[in-house]
Amino acid sequence: DGGITQSPKYLFRKEGQNVTLSCEQNLNHDAMYWYRQDPGQGLRLIYYSQIVNDFQKGDIAEGYSVSREKKESFPLTVTSAQKNPTAFYLCASSIPGGDGTGELFFGEGSRLTVL
Amino acid sequence: RKEVEQDPGPFNVPEGATVAFNCTYSNSASQSFFWYRQDCRKEPKLLMSVYSSGNEDGRFTAQLNRASQYISLLIRDSKLSDSATYLCVVESFQKLVFGTGTRLLVSP
Image (tube, rainbow over all chains, first blue to last red):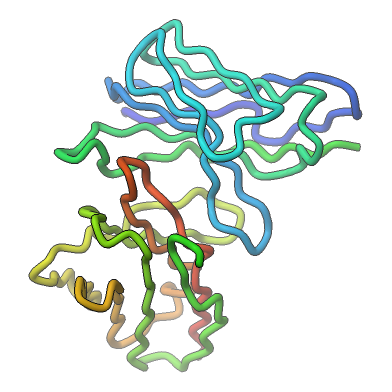
């Protein structure tokens, strides 16, 4: 079955530590995205990548880094510079539509808690 | 003004009721519109795309009003299983912008 796999589902981290969230898709989608969701807020775009070896900052990229070395993989690193990292992180992929956007397929999310 | 705005709710309705949500957007050049459904502590899933002419999928009807810059979602004959948060998503400058979501609670 095709889909997006995020891991880990739950993660606890001490302040000052970097942590990497994994996102793998076997849908053969070119575009991949990382969003963050906080209670009472909509999803906010962290980084996105339209093609391998290329990615762009979203609206809240500070304190995060990504890589896109393979089409299937788009890991997100939450660095110690991110001031409020506790959140629900969602990875998504899409086949870009005619205007550059298309239906998003989401992974099940990774819930990060900083202690 | 936020790019995409929704009433957060919650909307509390009895089973069988008809309920409607609106969502306003600020970018008049937006071309793509979607409704996603998100269950508690789960990932969002596409409910339906919104086409200019309006579209219907079973009990769900989505409409777009470009002049007033809003989209709507109508749910007829509400089921208990419709309880969820409904996210309005609008394309803006080739990125998808999410609303904060409208929470629906359907009770017996």
